Image (cartoon, rainbow, N blue to C red):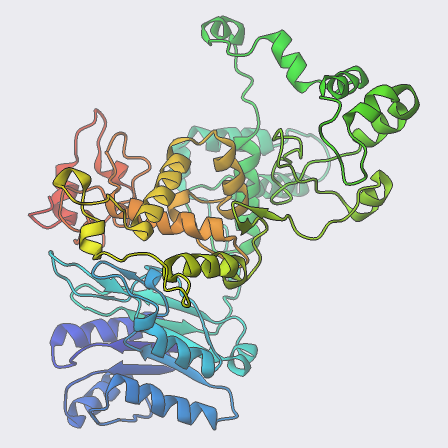
Length: 568
């Protein structure tokens, strides 16, 4: 089943009708839903014939407000026991991440729509393609949002587990078309092999033929010829390049061949001549020390370097005990220390040892190892700076005690009426240099600025331990700027992403070789507000590097064809 849904905002124009007919021709949907047509029913009958549809259902304009529409929808869904599916322009977003430009959407401003989706127990079916479905098409104050979406109940999703929703962007339309498909792409039958004479111009073709063609003499001549042709057919079919592939098995083979070639050595020559010009940062001796296994002598030396009365464990034994009785206890200690492993943020990440920090260390072990090492389990980590050191799922529980203490300080003792003598905020926050102010800062803005500074460090310091650990945990296959929140993420990471929003508002690409800059999604143009192109063209490349010719000059013909005159 395929469904096309489009808020066309008026079906009267010929261009709108042509776009709709073209999408109908390309996808052959069973259902076409056109919203906000602003036209008479006779126009609909004309469209029905052009779309070659058997049935038509028209809903006249009723003038119901958005909140009332949600209420009516919820009442219908609440009493509906069958699978439920909604698709179209719902005129709101589920989160601020579904909007770009304009004022930030607060949680309160989208609470009505979020409550409707939650109470109706609907699931967002997601999408493929451009992340936004509506744009205001203004050069100044440019805004785009994902207000067109598809929602469904659990029963509906269970019945259509292969559903895909695609955003189809149309030139000249504020809204994108939603294309829903529940059909699984069937593997196409392999086309008949036919030798292409154009392959004769490729040297690789001659090599394949020579390597596959056997010169065996004797036997049945017809069989020898057929066997040779089969081998050449297979060789040419495997080495066929620049052909669009849709078969899953062939795509798998292409990927395997590509990565095998990528990680295979080309057997480079004259390496010894090049190596003297590569600066050596770590000498061979230092490298051997870094990669060597920790020896028993090193462990004993570390134990005896500790202050005797420090490092008291929960069992009451300090470093002095192990130093004095090393001949007795040393053998068991060496055995158990060798079994201690670090902790990894995910299975593919490198482990970080518990002894990375001098103090404030936490030891993570498997349960069986904990028992063998004799480590006692202790609930919680206590308090640090008056706040619980272990953050759980509830922020309220963590900061409740600190908030109560702060309220006592601010409000004072209600019996004695002693407390803070209040002053107007505009005077408190006034700069000291202007006279009379105390120089207080907006704590929320200051906190976000510090989080943005952490984000900037992640972008610039790719080799730092913080960057490596966060990347392995939260964005192993993408960049920091493209990372998402995900499920079960810690508060610290969510806070860093809040600071990233500040960075995104001010970050600009300084175009160099252009290989990493995306044309439509990255800010790289010297235009106000978004610093992104507003132009859309069918020939628009994906990367900015495709606009640059050899020698570092712009390909002006392509630039003028893809961009409007102001941006070009």
